[in-house]
Image (cartoon, rainbow, N blue to C red; front, side):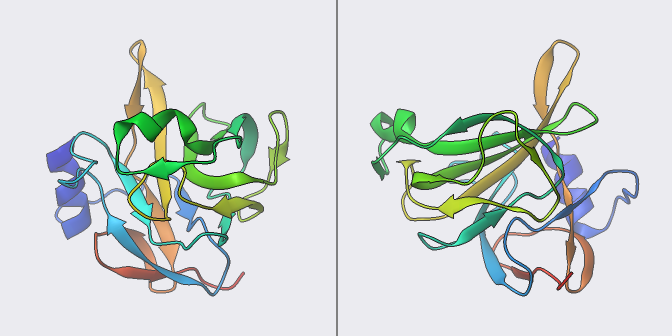
Length: 177
């Protein structure tokens, strides 16, 4: 998977069949990807992205679906595994059975509850620094259940410069709707 993602990011492998996600923040906003797919720090084995959102920045649904899990009672965070259980999050299930997850929300920072239907681009919560987190940010990933287990899915996003597989240390602007 790691090599496939690298080839997708470099444009050496073309994927035009996967869903195109909205960037998980408000239209017109631009944020840096501070940790990308399979990065060395904490994403070594994860096809996940970290966006440099500040505490209190609005998180938006990257795709329509139904909220299946919400945790918003964690109050602490830091760069120690003991803080993992404190991490607040929202998980949304999509029509194809895949799920997207949004982690490190601030305490009581969810705007949605399990069972709520959400639209692509809808505000769903506020960014924070709960759980295993060095600084405030949004940890985003998509996964799909196949062959008896959950697998990460590298995702394409609509940016102000077109459809892209995102790269670490690059800033991406969400186009106006």
